[in-house]
Length: 280
Length: 319
Image (tube, rainbow over all chains, first blue to last red; front, top):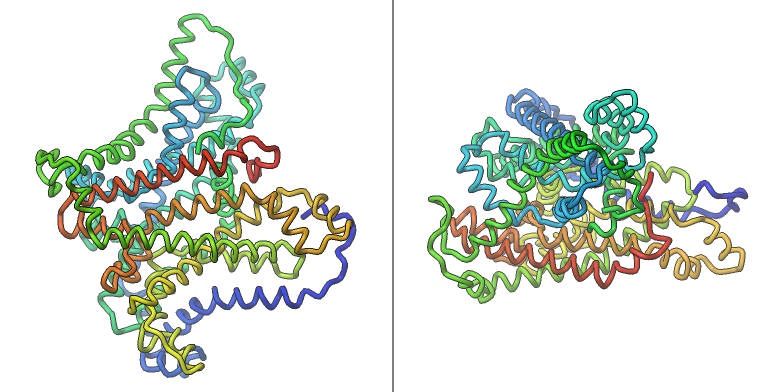
């Protein structure tokens, strides 16, 4: 894109914009419908689905915000996402460091084992994991979700971090060792700070993965106190089945953290996903 | 997937060290790799092995490891059921839909946003946004929109004097599901294609244009072949994802009406968690695993092999 040498010839871009607008409408109309619908009465949803509400009812939104369960689910989702990310990235960085900068027999075989994990469908393991967690008494414990998510996040995280660690010149390591740095000192004080962009990328991927996870919390958490947002939304829909406007309000409020995070971390998210896809 | 990641070795082989150093090195390696290895073996590898083992037993999931060995009975029973054959059929339908409709659509939009048009950064931002919303949010939102009587989709259709049962009708449930999947995932594939496109030197495209090639010919003979590796990876991801499709289907239809949108993962979940036939459900897990494995090996061997050799292939590798 930056290769252009001469200014682009003026062309009529109107048809391109027209297509982009149609696709944009396809994406945005459901979301706008939800946002506006949350301000309407249920009866108005069927008579006036697209227009602005005849009177703006804030009740649906404020009632959700005033209920403790929404905030509790938000907190549970955040706690699980952050803890998962810290464990995934911490453990994967240590292993990625070894895979990147130490030569030893069996290294490639071990690395291959981890990368093979990329294509293990999570659904395959869910039943044994459920039995395992029950055996260890981890059902209903956030740790059960956190550790499993971390384990399944390792392959991609290790691959991306190893790639980055390998790109850091060996001279820096030699200099650090000569200055009396231990391997861990080099890893902790020099390598990790240099790898900040890669660490940010894998962290963003881990957070989004955990935030959106449904199947695992679904089988691990039975108590309402543990529910994450996806479980809460599903339950809310069941509970207020005929109260569409109220469900829409709940959905919109649940979208806000994800879209806000996307707005802030878009570069890392897209960079990480495309790198993961094209490298993996 | 490993073969793809092997680049030129950037590793500095250490000079032969005296014995004490050597022992310290071994200790470092062990201590650093051990946490990842334990976590991975215990929670990823072992459960998959257990699924294989359990698939050979009649087992309700309780009381330690299963004991009632029945050989391959779970598998013969599984392949004899109508529901499972329909699961496989749905997998095929969704894969074909993705490859023939969703991915070309994503590619077209990616090419569009690769043009110099005003506001393309915003378009990109919006088109990708559904990908960050959870499957549950997406599913619940569309189950309301596609509701048979008063949903928004039918109110649009009623402007043209039409209506549809959407997810409630066995004949329309798969296209409806596919509509939702496209809404959520096309932006992801679009982003992959955009990243791949940016790794094609513009000089090649410009040279073709100077030689008088039309934009279609330039696309057909320059851009498309050079995007080959990217497209092959996006097909790969799409298939692997579809084999284990669960969340969206569970929220939208639970596999219904009367199993007409059921996937393998949904069937597995039904039998494993609702009816406690863990052995039988494990057989479904094993089939999912083997399908993924066979597909991945076959695909890497025969479809992506070229990409491991060529020079135009280290797409998106370095940012």
